[in-house]
Amino acid sequence: MAEKLVCRDCQCAEGELHEIFCTKELCPFCYGQLASCSCIHTVLELTPEETKVVDEYVDDFKEPLKSIVARWKAALETKGRIRFGEDLRILKITG
Ligand SMILES: [Zn+2]
Ligand SMILES: [Zn+2]
Image 1: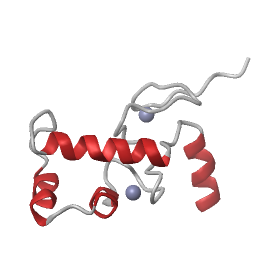
Image 2: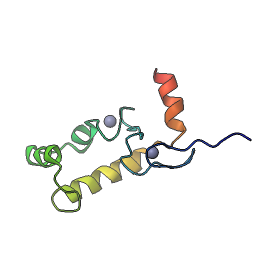
Image 3: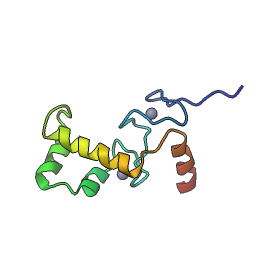
Image 4: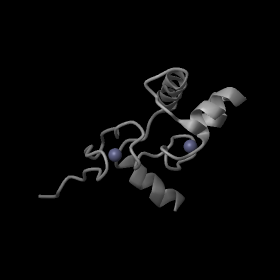
């Protein structure tokens, strides 16, 4: 029996979505690591004040960071988040 792949970081199974911002999740905009790419800046067209808030990333349970992260999550959902398993295929394609 083939063993099902499980994400080593967030424990999701193949074909499922990672925990949001799992270090293994790929960004659907740049195919880079979602947790560290800078698409949040370009996709959300952050103002200089918002950029500062995101760079400092103090506490995403508090405003103003909370609503910026909520906008980012909505943008990711709209674009279509990359499931575990799909990311492996994409990485093979893009090298
Ligand atoms: Zn994961
Ligand atoms: Zn990105």
